[in-house]
Length: 178
Image (cartoon, rainbow, N blue to C red; front, side):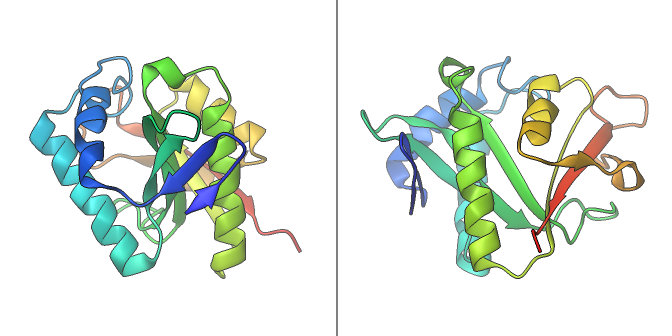
């Protein structure tokens, strides 16, 4: 578990499904992520996060607000981007928060803690993140975290046709400090 001033980043629990499914069914939250998900898709995502944590020792952890124990979303690290893309072996940092948690600094707090964990607990030389050009809040956070755009790693997402608005992905990364 990672603790910050306001948050806990922790392993997923069974009781996280309902609030995570509600967040995943929110069209604004999922706007740049392929669209809303049904409850069974949210359950499958949690199962993938748990398997990633089991296999890698880290994952996109559940983000819980400390003062009321509300599930706000996820943030964390995983190795392995999309097959056939230049990010397939990158250590990815990712986040997604429910809409009521936006604009409060939670994503930056959780991401900074995840990055610190990654530097302390992995030997990776960089941490990367990616999103679509239209997701300005996400790549804006990447910049605020000290990440820089690496255009040579930008890619077309294999799940979307090349002319789809969610096809083109920008890749940002930050190198380990010397």
